[in-house]
Length: 530
Image (cartoon, rainbow, N blue to C red):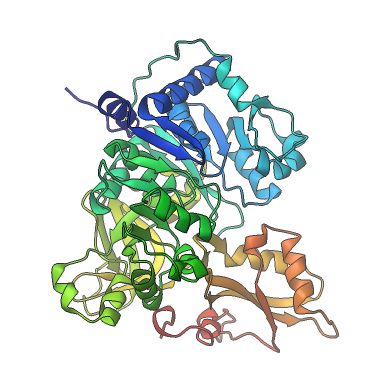
């Protein structure tokens, strides 16, 4: 009578009940659920014939296209593990992840093959599958994706795998706060429960038209890759975030739901076209990443008529563990007060388990909106651990609780609100940037004596890294030279956007750097810690 929890079963359901419903729209291409299922099954068959078996790892570096959606189902229904790659990473980071993840195969978009060309001689991959993109040419040797599918039998003949809900479904890498990315092990069960939260709390239904503005490699599109299929709704793919294109899709495809970091919200409200159109569908939009400013939420609601939903989570928690539940009583409040409430991370979701803010002794903080503590969680969506990394796993999961590293308060109504990040993690445009990693690069510069990297507010990205540097005696270097040095040694989005040169950095009597004093000069309100 037992049926394992796996989001893969939702593909079966969608094909059974909605075979002729448009499942995926990708530019000029459209696929019904029946057609989408056939393509996913062909991919499974092709992978099986290529030697991919249950438990094998397949790395995928694709933008938000129908190919990426096919991979989530085609790879995982074999019992294999999908390793989504962030195509914005440097060649060095990608090499580390592909090797560390034990990936046997890589499926890559032709537009993003350049870093792979640089490192392919260091990789031990059985096969490379390339999704061809008009206007792009690569020297990378590999099999064309469509040819890969067409060489399979007419009827899919991949083996049926008995899924254990606790087995690995995806291996998602996060920069975290260390120099090397960490592989977050997410199971069939954790993905299923998170997607159930996505469906319930974002109100996903059969008639929804969902726009994939959020990268699918980001914690599996926050679960959207599964939840939209579960409801029989329509996936609308978006190769890159382009505000005019998004607004056109709002009108032409009647988008009703989307997700994205605050930077995407900011880009939309500041797009000139936003004031020229009337969005009739009033799309629901979930946002998370850097805490969104209340003023930004208010603009999104007034200018575009977006119904903003603030969620919170981490890759390690599949990712949702909090959402800002909207109560009817809030409707009577002023627009400013409503936006302030919506800027809070909120309360536990129905299916994730328990989340709270605790003191250092593990006891919960007072619900007074003032006492600071760390957000911890346990339950159905927490990762199995970091892949091949028991030390960091033990540091993150203590006494059965996952420690987020995020500092927050709990308001009298139970709503949690982040105040700062204990690990100095910078979240810029939804991307994690480790301040210690940036500092590590800066210390390689011959003119740098000491440095501290902090986040500063940015209108477009929410927050960006700023480097504060003490130069060695007699050394002279410009801000632009420092920025270019960093961009030459790491992913461009991680490099500092501004640099300030100072005589000394603030420290405690024991010599510990006091980053909070640096941040206080740039942040007011929730970012500041007293």
